[in-house]
Length: 630
Image: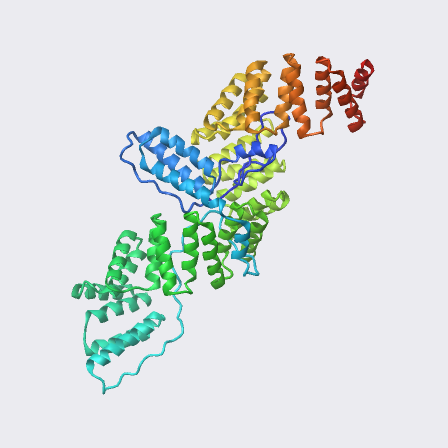
């Protein structure tokens, strides 16, 4: 889910199209109106945040030219972002663009294969499996919008105080040394650092070994005495480079200084020195995750859990890792384990909710997001996700409230103001919407969807110059996105600038070859310019993409009527009526087509159906006139 935001464009290509929600990140709809919206939802969001588990492209030496290389990196990043939000078709579109610029870049093939595998994996996510995994939880759990960053640090808490062996003077020095060291290790394992140090010092009095220095370094690190910890670790390594605990301490010190590669090297040396603990593998998992080596991260987190079955954050990060690997079933299992240990972990709940959301189980997702907000009322990311879910459930007033609360919780989050603005525009509060779009742009002035949606709002209130300005700004930020071109095409149609409209819609079709809205717009522009043959071609393409759009079927019928192809006109109107029986004008047009074809029987039957279905029809006098002629 970038913070995952939903986008549903408000722009249309003719005045006959119904109002839609402004753009938000969400799964596409299935109705004919929603199909048009689906093409406008492509700028997924968001976000956020963040975005979390995205592929950081490496510089590929095989590409020359700074601008070209930069564009390739942008396409790869967008492809990875859409893939992480399970918008796989859009991700593959961007990979195609990258391939055109760099057909030999090996990253393109690797990412394409990963996306195809992810598509197949998503199909296996069955509703009953989702329900069974979390059926043990009586309280709704939750998850994130877009997988957030892993939890880097863990809170050290003392466990049950261990029982240690008594050491007597009757024992040999070697036996006493061994018992003191074992006692210290027991205290250390349960986070009793002072007690551990005392035992290690007793061992030191018997024999001052590098082993004592190494284990004491771990204890002093636990006490947050990093200076002493570093000194002891370095001393131990100088005496014996194989001292695993000392390498662990050095790894943690480097980890805390954000030197991941150096830390990882020290942790590996600790393993080679036969030392391991849950915290070390947890830290290794975080490093691998941040380096986007997700399979290695998975192995490390699993190892941490095997050493400490109550390591809550290891379960949480393992869940995020499975999300990055597109393994949602195992992600849910890991998050479930985390929630058993941390039942009020709102972050986990948001992540679980996101998995349900992406699986289009919106009612279930809503429970988890609502639970997250209940735990953390000012969690703006959870509120945004809750708002997205309410939109999918067609509960727009509740969506507006959720976005308003998100904005109040964090007015500096550009997604809060953006989503709040969208819903204000949807409720036709255009002046307020423009205010919050402006805030979103002020907070992040390179966020193209804000300009695009602001342009849609200006288009609604017929401020065409400002609409055009903002569409152009969105195009400057991403000239390969079709949405602003669709908006421009609609704007130019409204101003009867048909050549400009055609240019904009054709550009959109080039960028998005399966865009119903683009081809409908091309047809509308040709029809307005009375270039009927080309209009018919465009409308047929639109119908091929969306066979159930009645507006295009009516437009096709009207053009066939104007060109005196009454058989084709009748066929178009017949298809319209099979899909919708609510427009008496189309029935009348069909009847008139039959009259032109001399098919009086069908004409009469259609006219009588008008009288039966629409007894108060405004053009009933014309219906009666035709019937009298028959």
